[in-house]
Every structure is written in structure tokens, then in C-alpha cells.
Length: 305
Ligand code: G1P
Image 1: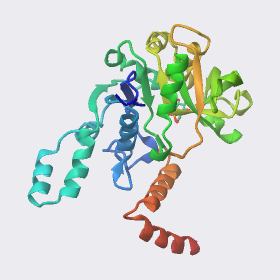
Image 2 (image 1 turned 90 degrees about the vertical axis):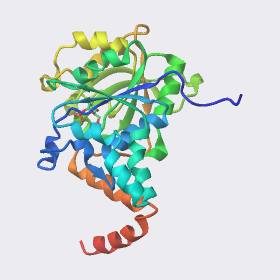
Image 3 (image 1 turned 45 degrees about the horizontal axis):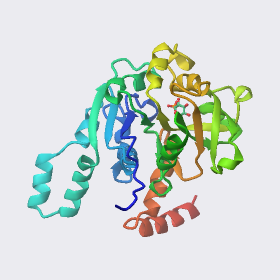
């Protein structure tokens, strides 16, 4: 049999999507922020596609009030599909069916949003006793620069947890979880992989242990649940996932250690308006169908600014 690179060990992904989306009000008054389109696909679909491309086919979304559209988006739409079929519009029909066929979707509701750590804890029954991946919907990783396969390989080599890290400008580090890092033994020859020795959630600039920020991709061991149960509310009076992972950085067994993979690829922060607009413009300009005309217009438009 041909040797396959496919990940067979890790199958489950957790996507927290219970946030209120206040940064996008009033657009998110009656619609989940995860459904905002980036060109013509809701932001959340890019994230689900990234998970399934890495072999994670069991996905649980942590939802809350106002999030019904998410379930509908990943479900069949019988009436619409029939109509498109009757009209012979098979390209659109396929685009409508795509989101349904991506993965096995599951939903858990987080009744009282008490922070990212608490959201992840609500996935415990679904995850059980296996390593799993958490993907935050505000961070889009370009499909040409996948990071999850590398994180999975690092886990296979060292066990424990693996986080994606990005280097940010020093003045931006206080918007993120910041990592204290140590190099690996060079004989291991793993470019871009480091040991994480500590984590601080959104530190003041002078307290940041480095300019390496946690990107919203986490490969976690199930030991995290026990730690989360004991984690007291931290920054913003919320149970922080970062604080729980910090506990595991000190362990060499029982869920630890924690490694970081430094990501240098293309990513978009759709969690705020500027990043969202940048993602939309960039992906539209690169699309085969829209790109040429859109870019031509964009060049003219920019000249007039
Ligand atoms: C969350 C995490 C933070 C991480 C960031 C990545 O923060 O708490 O550690 O660096 O996502 O996007 P949020 O942006 O949800 O406030």
C-alpha cells in the first residue's frame, strides 16, 4: 500500500463561535459574526475547510444565542437545492452542498460566555480522551500555507500540546497571548519549532516574555480539561485558555510539554474591521473569476485616493 501522509491520529476539532461579535455591530445584531462573508463564503467555512484539509472530520462548534444560522449553513437546504436542480444551475448547487459535505458537524451551546477556556471546556464530552485541535474563527490561515499538518507532526514526535506562533511588532503583543520560548536542540533539525516555557494572556508591553504571539490554532491534549476546571478567571475576569496551557508548559508528562510552531505564511485577522476588509480585498484580488477585473478597478481606485 502506498504510504500516506494523512493524519490518522487526531480527528476532532473544536471551533468556539459563541462570541457576541460586538466589533461588527450593527451587522451582527441578528446574525453571527462567523457568517460575515469573505468574498462569497462565510468566514467560518474557511476555518472548517482548514480543519478538514488536515484530516479533522469531527467538528464541534461551541455556539450560543443568535447562532442558528451556523447550523443551517452546514446543513442541507432541501428547498433551495431542489430549485437550483430544477433550474439546472449545477455550479451553484455544488457550492451550496459543499458546506454540508465537508465534515460531521456537532454543536454545543455555551449558556453563559465565561471566556475561551470555558468554551473549550464545554467540548469535553465530545472530545473525550483524545488529543484535539482548537481553531479560532477570527484567524484565517491561507489555504496555500497550511499550519495544522506541521503541528500534528510535532505532536507525533514530542507528544503534548502544540501551538501556532507568529512574530508580531512589539507594540502589538499585548493584543495576544504571548509565549516565552526556548530553542530546541539543533540536532533535532526542526526549523521553526520551539519549546514554549511560559504563556501570558495579553501582557502589558513591559511584561511580554517575547514578541511571539499565539495564533488561534492549538493542538491540545485531553489533560487540558482537568486543568481548565481548576483555572480561575484571569484577564477580563474570563477563564483563559492561555492560563490553562501555561500550566502544561511545566509538565513533561500528563499533557505536556508545550511546543510552538512559528508560522510565517499568510493569515488574516477577520476579528476586526481592518483585518476583515484586508482579507476580503486580498482574497477577491486573487480569485481567478473576480481577480482580474477587481484588481484593475482597485488600481484605479487607489490612484484616486
Ligand atoms: C484569543 C486568545 C489569545 C490569542 C488570540 C489569537 O484572544 O485569548 O491568546 O493570541 O485569540 O487570535 P482574542 O483575540 O479572542 O481576544
